[in-house]
Amino acid sequence: MAASTDLHRTFRTQVFIATSLDGFIARPDGELDWLIQRGERAGDTGYDAFIAEIDTIVMGRNTYQKTQTFGFWPYEGIPVRVLSTQLDADDPNIIITRNTTELVRDLDEAGARNVYIDGGQLIQTFLRESLVDQVTITTAPVLLGSGLPLFGALDNDIELRHLSTTTLAEGFVQTTYTVPQV
Ligand SMILES: NC(=O)c1ccc[n+]([C@@H]2O[C@H](COP(=O)([O-])OP(=O)(O)OC[C@H]3O[C@@H](n4cnc5c(N)ncnc54)[C@H](OP(=O)(O)O)[C@@H]3O)[C@@H](O)[C@H]2O)c1
Image (tube, rainbow, N blue to C red; front, side):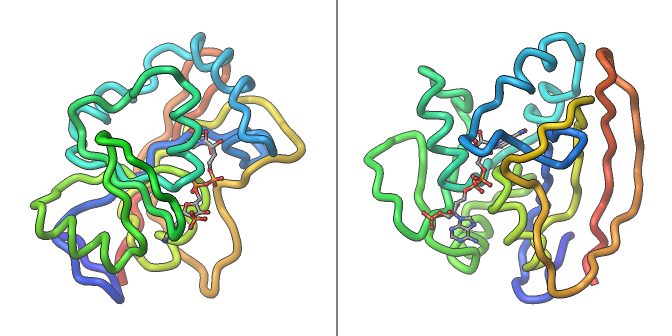
């Protein structure tokens, strides 16, 4: 059972995200063209197997708003929580949650076991609050020079434990770490 330093919880959280080699998850305007084109040639990234084990998705407002440009809802059948201090959306696909304290309480009450954490800023706040248990990063062989970063400032170092690294097609490299909760 996972435990955080500040918030007791009964569920496990995982990040499964793609970055450029210089650590960006999107261009400055949120564009994913650099990833989508290459990603289609990367072969099996394990995403389908990963998402099949997920019972709840938690994403930041910006990531949610990006999904609204896809023209379809990609998470049919999976409860999705969108963290935002300001979003006010009438969307039956999501539940809006204002902060991590409320989120942990609600997910515990809902019986969540395996939660997917998505969105750069969201992941950063979750790391700072010891709310991330495992991180899988699929790195694309491209430098973007600027963009939205996966990682950001920390008050303290966070030690990770390396689990595995695999090489995919088109030069993608996928690495998984666990984040021991101290
Ligand atoms: N490369 C990939 O695999 C990948 C994966 C996911 C997303 N993306 C891309 O990344 C971009 C979005 O990432 P992002 O870093 O800009 O933002 P994000 O994490 O999706 O969203 C940030 C927003 O989420 C809310 N939020 C985050 N943490 C919170 C907390 N602890 N409590 C309350 N609200 C919280 C805040 O919304 P408010 O300002 O409303 O309070 C914040 O402004 C999109 O372009 C998306 O397509 C790429």
